[in-house]
Length: 345
Image 1: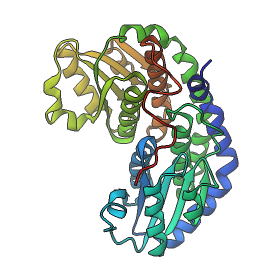
Image 2: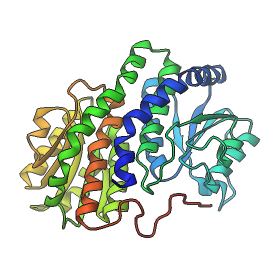
Image 3: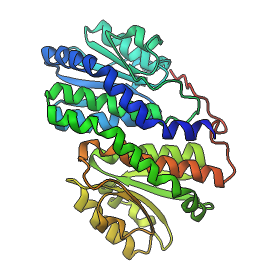
Image 4: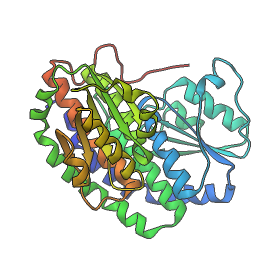
C-alpha cells in the first residue's frame, strides 16, 4: 500500500485526534478573538491550504459574521506594499509552516500589532515561531506529496475554532460525529477503482461547487492535476454560466459537488442543463435527485450539515484521484516535478 492511500484512509482518525486534543485550545483562542473584536480575518495560505482558507472564508463569514479576506503574499514580498492590518486577526495556514512568503505576512502582521495564529502540522516551524498562537493539526507525518489528511485537518481546525467562537454545543456534537461519517464515506469509496477505468483517457474536466463546497471544487481540481495529470479546472456553478458552459459538448466531463443546502437548487438547475447537453456527469452528493443525473454518482450521508459537508465531499474525490493516477501508471506518492515543501517568496 502506498503512502497516499494510507493517508487518505487515515483521515477519520486524524480528525478525531484533532477534535479531542485541541478543543480546549480552540475555546481559548475563540475567547481571545472575541475580546479583540477584530475588523476582520486575513488568511495567508498556499496550495491546498489556500483551498482550506476558502472554506474558512465561507465558514467564518456566515457562521461567525466576520469579514474574511485571503491574503496576496506578493504584496508583502515582491511589491513590499502590504495593506494596513491594524485591528485584524491574521491566520497563517500551512502544512509545513516553511513557506517564506507566508512567514512574511505574519511578520508584518506582528509589526502591526495583530493577533497572529499559525494553523500547521509542525508547531516548531518558522511560521509557528512568528505567530502569537499556534494551532497544531495533529495529523502526524504526511509522506505523500499530495496533501490529503492535512487538508481535512485544516478544515476541521477551522470548524472547531468557528464552533468555539459561537459557543454552540449542538454544532460541537455535529462536529464530533464527523469522524464516524468520514469512515463510512471512505468505506463506500473503495469501489472507485472500477470507475477510474472509465476515465483513464480523459484529458479535461470541469469541477463545480458553490458556497461551502466552492473550496471542494478547487481542492479536487488540484488533486486531479497534481496526481493524475488531468486538466481539471474549478468553477462555482454561478461563474460556470458566465462563459465556461459554452465549452460543454456531448461527452464533456463535469464533476459536481451537489450537497443539500442553500446552493442545491442552483446546482440542480445546472446539472439538468448539462444533462441536456449530454455531458458526462460525475456527482458527489447526498440527494437522490442529483445522483440520478450522474453517469458516475458518489453518495454521501443523507443527514449532513451543509457547513461540515466539505470534510466529507472531498473524500470520494481524493480516492478517485488516487485510482485514476494508478490506472494511468503515474506515481502516487511523488508526482513528477513536485516536492512536499514548496518554498515561495
